[in-house]
Length: 170
Image (cartoon, rainbow, N blue to C red):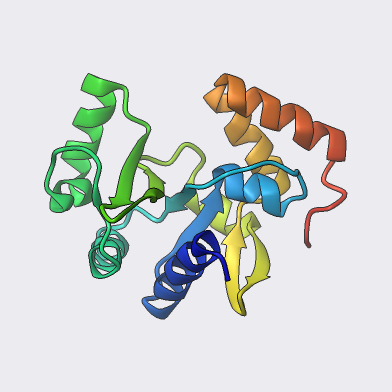
């Protein structure tokens, strides 16, 4: 198994074991829905309720991940801090990275771009390494890419339009 596969497996194993409420979004979701493209980081939308956030932060710490921003990891749990980051810095996602394996990075939305309950309800479950992993639905993935509007997201959106959800799991 490649080091990147081990990275994804370790994250999914830990999130599952700790019953973290999350949905895979971003490049990994694009690939799982059938678009051939390279991606390394793992983008997640997680339930921002305090208990879920605390468990998530503990999991990241246990796996050796640390915030890329020069802040304490507990600041990520604070709604006031996340709101301040969005307002003052335009932050959309908070990045955790592994200091010894810097390519291993987990980006987490700091607010609900689409209500998490909707993402979770409509998510598609993929069996990845024997783990049931919730992945953003095809329509929500397209919506997130459109909202982001970055050039790479527009390229993903075009590729998603080309496949039309035909390869998406159900």
